[in-house]
Amino acid sequence: MARLTRMPAQTALVCTISESTFTLTSHLGHPISAPRIQALVDRIFPFYWRKNMSVGTIEELFVDELKDLYSAEKQITKSLPKLAKAATSPELKDTFESHLKETFGQIERLDRVFEILGKSPRGKVCNGMKGVLEEGAEVLEETEKGSTVRDAALISAAQRVEHYEMAGYGCVREYAKLLGQKEIAQLLDETLSEEKAADSKLGQVAKQVNPAALQEA
Ligand code: FE
Ligand code: ZN
Ligand code: FE
Image 1 (tube, rainbow, N blue to C red):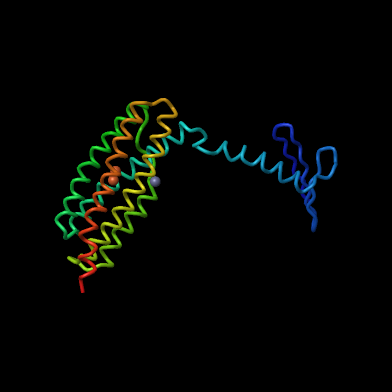
Image 2: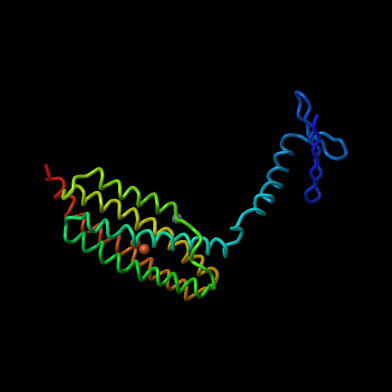
């Protein structure tokens, strides 16, 4: 028989485990009903979890997501040259190359954001972007080199990247506004506009590429 006693805040619980029964009683020996146990668990556990978490406030969430975006942009600078190289349509190549240049500028903006905050941009890996970019690399294995279908698939992969970034920048821009970080909100908004423009440029290129891919036998 095991006996455990926990006393967080003003709550005292006695948990008794014998061979086949499990009962919870208050420190005065009164049995505790199931809904009451649930209510206690809901109240006590988040308290313990939060103590071990690094993101407990909007400020911390803001920095955490900025680090995530920093990692995402760094990964993109390594991937975009491969996508540009794999593209056949000159317009698509050009779209990738000019967005690569823009991406370096976006990293500079994030550097400035971290400078303002007095924090390091390092310390996080964006696993979401890692996955999205891995799927982009799969396109090269799945499609034939020089085919227009490959171009169509590259556009689809790249638009996923842009949408992922748009979601990220949209969120941090709103946190920045909320936290009264006007300059940061402005910087993030500039990048968000670039991501949106890149997405719509890819959409335009697709209007040429996709019908051509349809014709490809
Ligand atoms: Fe970007
Ligand atoms: Zn991420
Ligand atoms: Fe982008």
